[in-house]
Image (cartoon, rainbow, N blue to C red; front, side, top):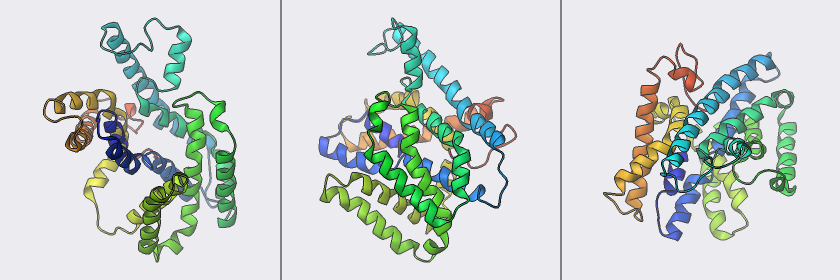
Length: 322
């Protein structure tokens, strides 16, 4: 979904088609990562387990901040070279004061996916109160979700932050999905026997609500997110393709833009009209495959695991939630 979201930026589809595809691929593309991180935190750090905040923060810094710093530097240097050679349509570095450089780094202006790593780290940095919440039962956790949703959507929070991909604001935005993830472990038993009908109901609601009203986008987003989780929870057949993507998620996320997708866009624009659905599908699919291939190559290098925030001795499922 994240790769497809960025592929839409290179495609020039008819407005109605663009809107429909955007709803399908953008609505839960990033929220699902926050939900999974909250889900895993709730499982691993309940009242029965010890919690070392310093160790948890150190691991999160290694997992999130090292890739953020390395790839921000890489894409920043490339951006500077493109601007110096006249290949960039606009200048965000050349001729700008150093304050603008800092702002560009903070707002992920070099490559738009980078903000997520900072946002998730900020949520993890708030682990002590989240750990306290994880020690309570279902009523308190549900109440926390309701109170936070009300505060986030009723207060004018967006006006307090930079426009664009402000990672602090998006940490606050992502926290609503993270908190839902904290609730899921406590209702897994209830869901297990009803997962298929519940997934059908929630997915149907998430699809139909935006059609019925323009004011139901946010509820539809939560229905799609929960419905998707339930749909995969009901799957008993091993899905090797998804397992492979999960293992290399971090690399795919970091590598697919700007260079891989830009290169693919140049190739496919010579074969297919950018206004066609086939252009968008080919761009998204082959950018995904190329990023997967490059991730495997990177992990063969001595510093590859560290660059992706993984342990050098090996790597397991490479989701952002690790």
